[in-house]
Length: 495
Image (tube, rainbow, N blue to C red; front, top):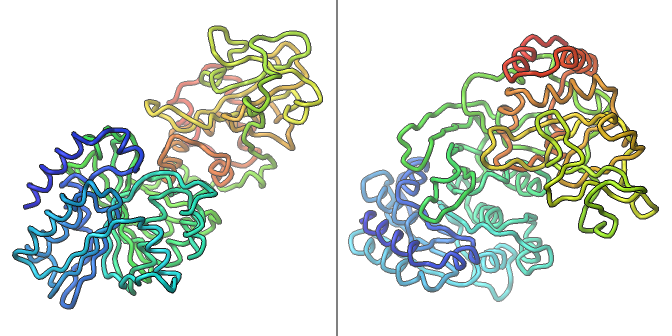
């Protein structure tokens, strides 16, 4: 029967307008992924299962759940399923899916239209006129992906029940978790972006204080999880237990939704959420072996320990548009964008680019400029095709013809000392360290998108100031460096 649901999914995906999919932020779950997700639920015996499918689509996830029950994977006496789907054009497909299972299973099902966020929040808050939802034993979801505006009714509804988040997917997970009874289980496929960054910190706190993480599954391919819908995104499957005692976490990986090369390891929780991390970043180690960053005792210092800071580039170009100039001219200073950097080198001014090369220095711009000096910069965004997330470069004042000030555009992260430059060897050593394979691998454990935030860089550990200066002096003597040279040098780093 699941094969028939899969054929229906393919037809619906093919005939649904791409704009409609984007508007709703929802993409239907392939059967192989649905079956894998259902397999993560613990074996439960006896009693009534109250199943929540929030953002049910045509019912692929509920169908996979019922298939497992029918094959003896669960010992429920009865299943009561609530399937929420805001797109009423999918209701006929969803009803058909559920009716098929009613013919041979003891199941009661309800298809609910309307806004899941509003309905769930009203039920949790205890709105006098709201029909209360049950305490679910299981929740399975592939929620919509879409930003929540700060002034929206969704944001207000969520705030009433103590949920602060910025995307529909994390709102759906938080609400579903809140609707679970004690020891209730939740499995969801969601973007990996919640694992790090300041915007998702309240959601991480909400999730980690109310549940235990039991399983994380990571897809190596960004393109093949929802390949029928052309979705380019790093997705993760997470299994949570409401009120559970946090123990070891199972982490699995596969290239795609065929799960043909599935690899599974178990890790202590302190490798998933580091004990001293105030941001509660969620790391996803993909092997049992610790990498060089974890093994090296020399890499244990914070930016505060080594006396430097990192900030997002202060020049927001559209706000200072009247002061930008395509090329340097009297009264201007260099303005640096990510496109000016290639490897550790700088190309400025750069011709044949749509970005300006200079900004006027005047009363309106002065507070956004840094004094000329040596800085280490990291691009905030890498392209999806690049092998590296962190790409560091060194800014040297000699590259800019004696300019007294520099402008750093908002798509750069800048390492500095109180908005002034670093000692030259220090800047080079920091750039070399950040460009190591070990740093990139370690960074990918908690960062699942192409953005590198200043917060991410603040929370990383670094070698000592002395070690970074020694590393920089070595790099300056060597001249052009290969990746192999950099990685080998890190391995021999001493505190």
